Length: 262
Image (cartoon, rainbow, N blue to C red; front, side):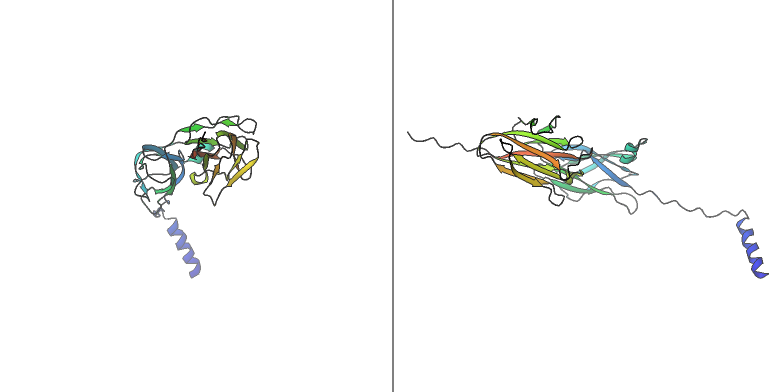
């Protein structure tokens, strides 16, 4: 009987109408989804956007104190499509300044928030050089995109259609050309490979991704003529997120041969 009575009392208390203590719902953790654009130039004051979920930053802090930045605006979004939802419900506009002698590299930052979660990410800061955009069709050795601009310059492209992008330079004997790709370091999904071909279309040098540090190729031109540079993924994959930035430099110009004595 005592056991039965305790059960009845317990039920009576539960149903007595006394208020139960409300449980606090855990606050959503702020999360950075992406940084747009994926690179910015040094030596300038520029703006970029951080897209994320439930962001409410108190500021922005870079690990390298040479880079200074501040939050300009926090905008709440109402994503509807799956693509919009993948980007998050918040856009944070940042103003950043980097000295012109800052070494090209990925620079880490964090967004201080109330609470324990301090979302972190990085952005690539590169040399401020003229920029050229990829132009299709440039997906075969017979139809490369000619690069007539004077080096140095940067080429921006994306492997979202065909499995390779092909570019053509006019090389002169004695010149040293350098090609360096920015992909993995800026958040691209591709594993980049660079391959250089001579005027006979023979492969003369190849560079592959090195532990997610991307890759670079340097080559001394042995003879005048058109040289082709191929950009492709290690597994020949394509995707809308396979973006890249290719720095093209002429490290050393051709050296003219001394005139022969009469």
